Amino acid sequence: MSEATTATITATTSSAATAASSQSAAPAPSPSSMRAVTQARYGDSSMLSISTVERPAIGADEVLIRVHAAGLDRGTEHLMTGRPWILRLAGFGVRGPKQPIIGLDVAGVVVEVGSEVKRFSIGDEVFGIANGSFAEFASASETKLAIKPANVAFDEAAVSTVSGITALQALTDVGKIEAGQRVLVVGASGGVGSFAVQLANALGGTVDGVAGTANLDLVSSLGAERVFDHRAIDIADIDGRYDLILDIGGQNPVRKLRRLLTDSGTLVLVGGEEGNPVTGGIGRSLVAVARSAFASHRVAMFVSTEHFEAIEQLAGYLEAGSVKPAICARFTLDEAIDAVRLMESGQVSGKTAIIVG
View 1: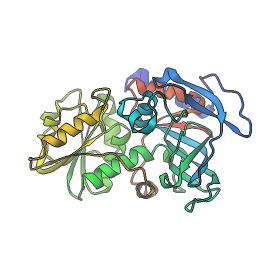
View 2 (view 1 turned 45 degrees about the vertical axis):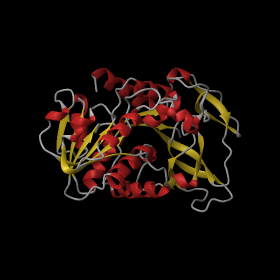
View 3 (view 1 turned 180 degrees about the horizontal axis):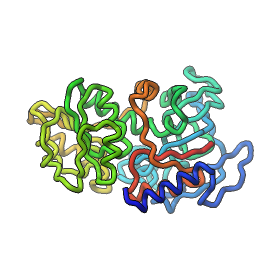
View 4 (view 1 turned 135 degrees about the horizontal axis):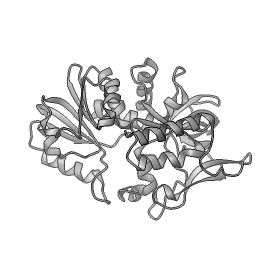
């Protein structure tokens, strides 16, 4: 991370702590309304505004959460921009976003429960995935929430779910990691990568990481034995072979990654920020999986499952302290648009928390 970026994060983090706003504050909400970060059209952060909107109504299987903190992740950016376009066809809105409030990761306190909710009661501290978490209140399906461990802070819980369960499922459900295996995490300083390094260690793996120059120390602190600077070394020149590789971000040719596998190794393609505007990284993954059909090693792609069973598994690692979110910046709700701009710049490492209340 550059000195300018570090200064930016330091300034905004300090501002978040004092609740000073760099955005024009929306009018004070009424008892039936709330403040939220909204968008009317797909696009970049210039489409966002801080608005006063009605509090969400909940369905029979949903709860209403008073949001204490939210997390910013790449999924939020994809839903904001509507890219890749396949997301629009998947039900998120063809002409514009169906959900006008941005944000997925959430942590807070349950203040209302639907008539069919069985797992939660008013007053429970929860974390998981909400329907628009950059707001003072958010609705969420009870199937996408878990009880927040008492020893985990709201901001730590808030940034954990999307990235954490993606990393966990990539390692276990798809990668079938076993104790003693050698694991390489490509993109180890990002949201998913920072969780993957820690989880792979907790699962008994010996972990190496690939990251940018400014983030090598961060990845080492997360538990990577060796860290390779992708600006200084071609990934094909890494010495050694790996039983499991997680490629996060899709910046490297698959053929080079496959050369780093053992004969029976597995390459898991986790998302991808490159690719055409229609399918994004999905197209790259599909081609790679098809080409590996007759190879001794395995190439796999997946989409994470947003379910409380995975979130509860992650909660166990958070509670035990074997995984601790790498929060590198904190912003207030009023500063959330600044947080999105910083992500757009490509200069964010670890996780970013939005402190709401």
